[in-house]
Amino acid sequence: MRESIIMKIHYGTALGAVVLVAVHILMRLSQKYSDSLQYQNVLANYHFLPYALMLEVVLILLSVHGFNGLRVILLELKQGATYERAINYGSIAAMAALVAYGSRTILMAGMGVS
Amino acid sequence: MAERLSNREGIKGMANPTRYGIERVAYWLQRLSGLGLLAYLIGHIYETSSIVNGKIAWDKMLALTQTTEGHLILTIVIGMCVFHTGNGIRVMLGHGGVGVGRPGQPEYPYKAASLNYKQRLCIWVSIALAALAMMYGYSILMGE
Image 1 (tube, rainbow over the protein chains, first blue to last red):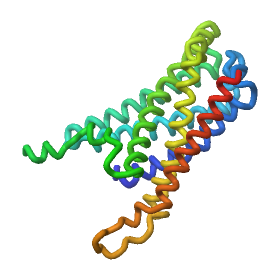
Image 2 (image 1 turned 180 degrees about the vertical axis):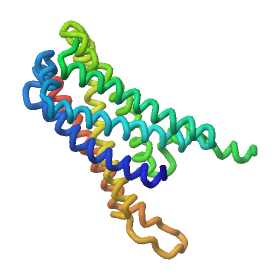
Image 3 (image 1 turned 60 degrees about the vertical axis):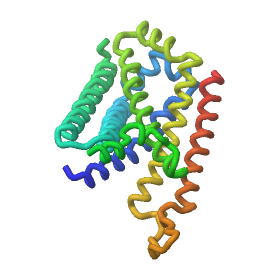
Image 4 (image 1 turned 135 degrees about the vertical axis):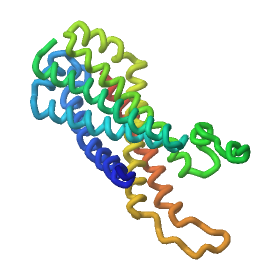
């Protein structure tokens, strides 16, 4: 994929994440901070489908943005065909692993599997 | 080859925030805050995954993270998040040509139009907003 398109994705994921992370933080502030972290309250968040879907989208946006940012930093440090290929595929793999692990939590908590 | 290697500072060059003014500091802080936020994201996803193991596991994890040290780390994360957002928007607009000015004639002493007061102001505003958000976050976290 062309780097210009990747940068557009990078900026798009950043803007999307800013809005959704703000909603995520506001949800914590909708009640007393320590109360919002109580087991039943957090579980209720996962059971509320629109919020669970939003968490999934935030997870994807931040993983794509974060690991692409890391990829850019690593490619600035060193160049070379093999190195660049390793960094590119490594970033995608790490991104996919984080999304899979986070999605597992959202799915299991949402469906009440514990 | 030797000259090429001597010019390649690698990670030391990237980690050095000096020599090129506040723009360089912003570049350095943007990368540092980005790495910090990625580390926090991974930690946060791991932390929240304990909810699937039941109430005892969740409470154990809360006891580990909801401490003074945990709140201090969270305060730093808030600062990194706000700075990364503010400065990121500046970079994004700059890449789109907004606020970078028009290049002048290349006459000595050449002043790059892109390194102007608007850009510098945005960097300072991002730092100030991060500091304010950290203070607000700290008061919420510690005021429990």
